[in-house]
Length: 376
Image (cartoon, rainbow, N blue to C red; front, side, top):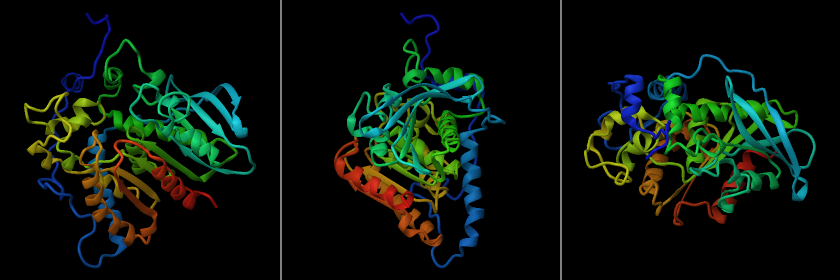
């Protein structure tokens, strides 16, 4: 028997709360099984891109929803500090993302003087939350905040909504999202993830030792797509690394993972029509209605251009089984945007075999990429 107050994420419950109906939007991506081109064939002036970019953003906004109208003060409070090997200072603190909502986080400050580059490190889908990027618990290969601090970056990692200390153990999978949608029926949890990352950027900007022009984001899996999603909305994030956190909706097969398996973009749930798709059977399972979605993730990445972006995808990823194919098709459409904006060398992709992970060779290439654009 479930305890009183027990909640678990349910797309149908979201519909009951919000009364949402399907968005009948039509774009150049609607009705296509492939990815729409971002830059038409033949010469095109970069001056035409802002209008196209605005249309992509308008479509995305319809699915992300409406954020709060105002941003509260951070009211950051340090709870403890500890000096680690190599002289790195680890600060445990909390910062306010919405009124009364304080998020637990770690800040790593390497030794040195002057204004330093900084990286926000959102975590993957794990109830270790921030402790994994911090190198306290979880997979040591994913301790990005600690590794980048050792490399000379100020780093910040925090618990995402529904994870770590922000998860109620008495609540089921994404159960906290039910209360979130009761509070924000016109928003989305993916929009909230991007909002919280931007609040972490706000915190970094208040630190006198952080260079405001050199703030990046780097994450694996959930942390990867939180990174590129936040970058699409927050231009203060100067560069990004996403490890095994990318797939297109169409080549993934259906939007079930975004609307039903998670609570991230529930408006995509109206494009799940097959009765055979469920929590046990959705990864890489196609649904013909997916082609009617009026955008795809390659267009979100285009909102990041021309800022530096490093993307990895595995050809044998059990979570994103079509990620390698998605990445190659995406690059073919995204690179012309970077070229048009005279930023070809600011986009780097890496397809590899090695499962859903961040092996040492990927780390070295990713960190060298971020060094190239932030270490100066």
